[in-house]
Length: 338
Image (cartoon, rainbow, N blue to C red; front, side):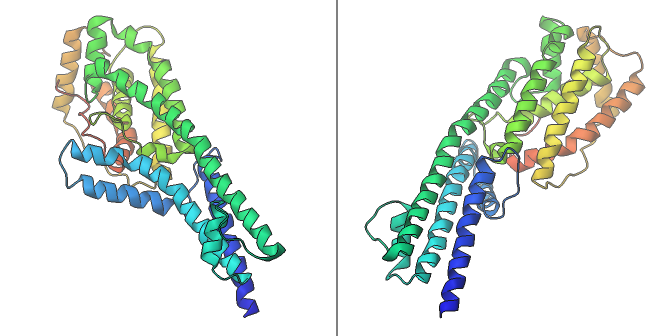
């Protein structure tokens, strides 16, 4: 029997240590890590929310999905506290108290209505109280960080409403900038968008749960917004020919954005499918539309087509996979209504 109690204490200590490490790796370690205890919890919440949302119509479906991220964030500390409670209960059982579950709960939440006897029991009780407070402190400390990163991401998504429509379209983005200020005005935005997508990449790889946080507006989605920006950068690099450094700036944004999306897709182990092809006639119609707006275009249309398709096949499977993951709104086609 003594051997069983020793094994129970060792197993309980391992569970407590595991829960504490999961909390630190989730909120403190500055990189995305696959967590064996926490991952099934939030994936289960998102899958359940998605299954419910698919049975509903808008705006109820969006209302369900917008709560999935916050619920998952709150479910994680509850999971860690539950694991700690059971782990310390096993340790207390090895010390032979009358009711180890009650003693563990009293110690974890610092209630003090049931105290273990002996010096060993007191040490374990104090340790459990410290673990409970540490878990709550970690979560409370990093909730503002999550909210700040979410607000920064959504500010750029909302900014696209006036520039690219709802949902955002690359052709609308180019058309409005060309009509009101010239394509050079769009070129001024690439460095700002590059900084934004780099910040999104850093925050979402450190805290992957942010990927699943939905926008407050049902028609908004950060994945759709990035897709529209990548489409616009693709068009700028493949079919346009304007003076200045806009081409280089668009390329820098394109590489940064496609890299961020690829890293997130790899973290979630998403299945990448073949991109939906588009017709050459749609391309020619879009180019004719841009030419009518006075957008400076490259002379070789066949080469522009080849470049556009090559880049499209690079980033579109990743954007589509992330859109499926977060249940994003329907994304406009590359050529919009042109």
